[in-house]
Picture 1 (cartoon, helix red, strand yellow):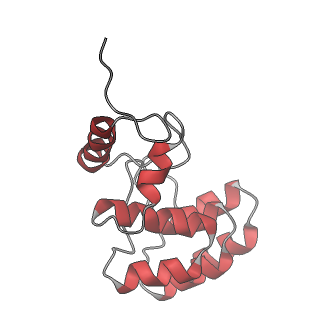
Picture 2 (cartoon, one colour):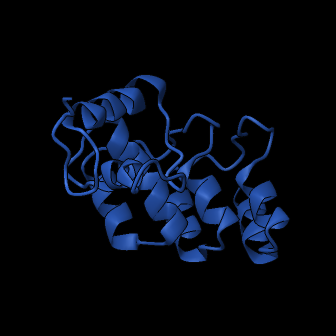
Picture 3 (cartoon, rainbow, N blue to C red):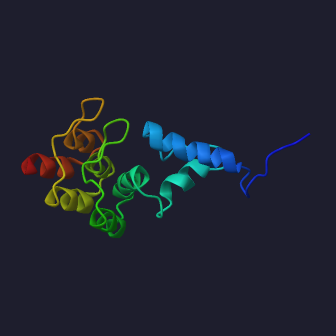
Length: 143
């Protein structure tokens, strides 16, 4: 019986290649969903990744509120209005997780405030739905 060589978390090399291509081709970025032993999250969060993975990394950092990484991502040319497969932007993520400092930074650097996601929600809608009325008000006043 033969089995492919596995890494320390029991994923095959070809499986990692497949997952990387899957993420690129289908713009899949469910960064909270974990496959296997968490390899999906690890691949998405590797800083050395470029292109779409770096854009997804920006959304994740907006969710976490990591200003240093947000500034770095924008400085290397990532799109401030990049949309994931649900058409959510970094501003949607920051607003829905109560990250006022990130919201202000993104708006001051050109984030579109009235952009709708796949469900018709704007960043202000996300803030209101999650109990962040101060963020919702700030976004509405910036529009």
